[in-house]
Length: 281
Length: 269
Image (cartoon, rainbow over all chains, first blue to last red; front, top):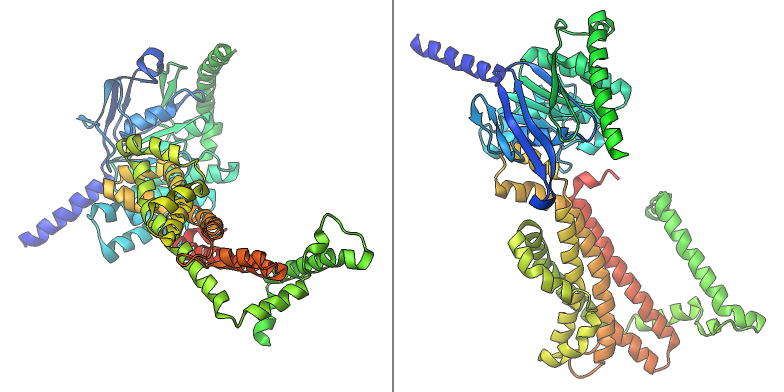
């Protein structure tokens, strides 16, 4: 009796782990590149709160340091000042609780789709053998790649590669997903399909999501919170709460509310873009 | 018959065969031009026609000495090449992954690299006890620098996002090396091997011509050509040249086959 109870408890906790998400905080973060006498400040005093289980989209003019922000959140780089923390724990390096989906595909070309997906758990040795393969296959079926598990990344289309990458991230059971312009370079059709697919996944799992993009429509369609960055040195200009109902669909983008968000974001971003244009002139 | 038929069904092989046939025809026309017209264009008339070369080929095929030339050139090339691979690949990888190692060894490497392998011939003839060893050493140098520079370049140009992705999934330094850096460098290793193999053939031939057919360390296809030159047999010179061409082709296609086997993800293009 008691053993069955504890068993059910452990499966429950496992389930919880899968569904759990963390709160991410950036506090007064600054980052500069180059030698001290000739350094360029990329991020200046950035403070953002990424609430647990919400999808926060970061938009900003191109070249404003969005990728640097991602590198700091992922732990690939350390801030010069300030700190990044996950559930109050200081970030000191990359770890499996924060999975990144990169701008261009980062699927490993010499591994098949299945090998790519099982790569993380295999290396850490925390899941093994046929049960791992089974889990990976289920995930790949879920992202619509059931027929392609033994293909190499170069044999997949752009949209398929991104979905494989989502599966590879999800199998590590992260509590935070960091997406660095993941749909850039896809054609308009696959892009909108990927957005819908991604939203479905998010609305199902409710993992904390940090999504970087330069497309305003994409941002409003996906976001709970919209963080608009200002130009170099980059800092947070405004955070807009996107109050559209979930589950979302494309029709909502044509609603009056969405239009208002769009107008506001456009104005803010346009101002920033003009500034950078003036600087470069 | 059906095997030949199948062989010729493949468009690529058909093209290849046709190209070689065309080449031989042009060669024949060039060689016979002065006999037909009485006009000699820049000594092209001295080139033996393919039929004479073919006859000379048939002449040397039964001779043991000719095949011994193959064996000695091949063994020199393989020795130099394999030693260069065995030392060059780890050396190049170390240069790529360790900045201290790079700081110490890259500058002297870069000073030695521009010295053509043949410039080492006189010095190595003096320093090494036997001719054979000095030829092997020079051959080794020919392949070594090319292999190292390719391995280094290949390993350094691996997309950083692969490393980052692996790191965030919990890869150790060892995992990064064996699962990312090494397979990521394989294409460059094979490029380096193919180019290095070409250079070893160049170097071996030149070294054989220089060291001559002395009592020790003589022979080889280079010496075969040189000997034919001394004996005034134009046809045999060309036989020697074509032999080297075939030998080089065997080597490079073997490298390609091995590469094909080890890099299944590159079979797609």
